[in-house]
Image (cartoon, rainbow, N blue to C red; front, top):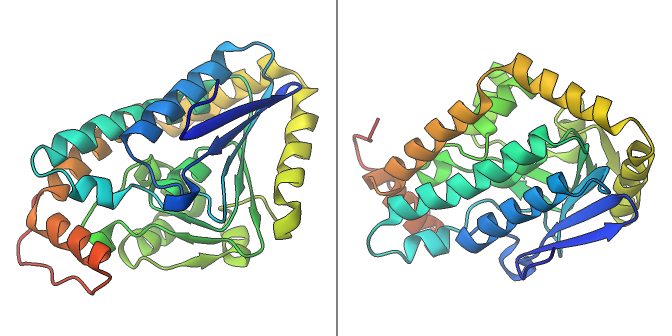
Length: 264
């Protein structure tokens, strides 16, 4: 199954899922969110797929949500974001709970929901030049993509808050030391290494892997419920004063001037 914005290529028992909007740094618009869900469902339903590698076409993994697409909505921007995140979060839930292990191969920058796509993977490998930045609050927005749930569990509450409200950029070596990724490799070896891990896992006990994934997901708590809360919160903030100013400032490449009170 391949679509213009998400390419799926099967290599034996491994499915390579590639975000395919390189001209936009693989930012997530409604089409890509829908296509990503279709890719997740295709991988989950195909018994011959025993491992998945998720990566981005071009120089970057994913810059998060497409703020230009959000800003172009004269009305109903909050409904647009609710719809987009519904598809995105459903895709993440399916990747998280399918039998096949998911390996994120992070090339270049992962920002916003791109960090969520990396964090939801069972294992993550990044290139030595990779960078990670949450970026939500810098644009007057709130987390989505499961980041408010996953990050505290991966790096701890204090470090998660640092990433989410200070918008600190993590380099690859820091991401490794914080436990955000499992390995750092040379840029030209990234995809080969991720595929090698996937091929190793594809030879293993797929049913046991899937059961283990679901046990861990259950032990962490109500992931899907948290993503619903994320969807509602980011939708409200996107049409509030801070969100409108933050998105406009980001697109104009200027520093935002946030107004006083924000929506809760």
